[in-house]
Every structure is written in structure tokens, then in C-alpha cells.
Length: 118
Image: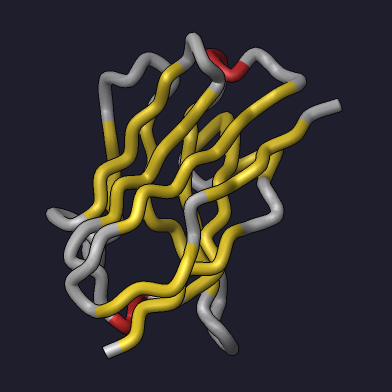
């Protein structure tokens, strides 16, 4: 059974940092790209960041570039999202995904809430 479980969300102030983690089980994680998405209330889910299977290439949404860093540890079946200089507009539920292509994710987690207050 494939499972992706996010953790690390919470409520913080503007300018603070959070590190999200995603534990992957039940699949050969090293064969998939790893991506993070988010969905704010009454908005569509949007791509945040992605990293390819070999950890050799990353992609970021323009709104988070320079503030967020995606990483992965294939040996531990983990992916991470380091979020710095958080803003209220970063408030959303964050989801991790195991994907065969950019935005094409076969498996997604249940999400973790991030709330940034001003």
C-alpha cells in the first residue's frame, strides 16, 4: 500500500520558517519525481516545487523561488520543503506527491496545514 504522509505544518508569523517533511512508503521512491503543491481556501491547487528522481534538477513556482527549497533523501524515502521568509499568502494546505512527470502525480499525501499570520 502506497502512503505519503506529510508533517511539519503549523501556525507561524510573517518572516518565520518551517520545514515540511513527507515520508513515502510502498513504492520505489527513487523512480519518481517529488513535488509539493498547496491549496489555499477557495483557490485551485497550485504547484510549489519539484525535484527530479536523481536530485539533479529542481523547479519552483515564481511566488516561492528564493524562499523555498525542495530536497529529497531517496535512502530514507523522504522529501522535504524548507520554507523561509513566510508570508500570509503562503497560508494553505501543503501536499506532497510522487510523480512521473511535472504535475503528473500518481500518489499524493493527505496534506498538512500551514498558516502564516501578519
